[in-house]
Length: 173
Image (cartoon, rainbow, N blue to C red; front, side, top):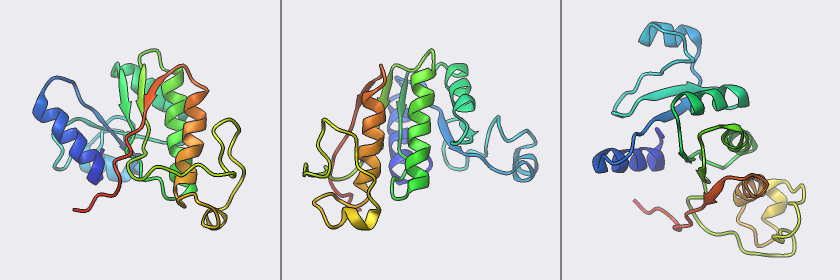
């Protein structure tokens, strides 16, 4: 919610005023959190230019994410994690797992802001993704980083969440 896509979405929802908006950000160190906001880092991170409440979460801690979702009664989760590396990809899969465990989350928007992955023999919809390195994906029709998005999609398909993706193509601004 603090990057380009996330911030734009947050601002649009805030301007509309129809929905309550909160933002998750990466966990900051205790020293920074205590120095900047005077509280434990699990509660709130500095909001900067966002006017929506922004909470620190550890994307490796599924239970913490689940508790935070439930505490704030999150119904729809929109992921804008930049999916260009395995760490980010695992973070989104952890958020999906937390959303699936949550008592309040019903809908999930996958971080797939970009181009659609062409279907090819390496990635059929009816079987799990092969273990390909990013370099290997360039030898196929797959758009390199989209292999991470496909992995998240496979996890989403195994949940009871309503979900969607927006494949808007490249952002040119």
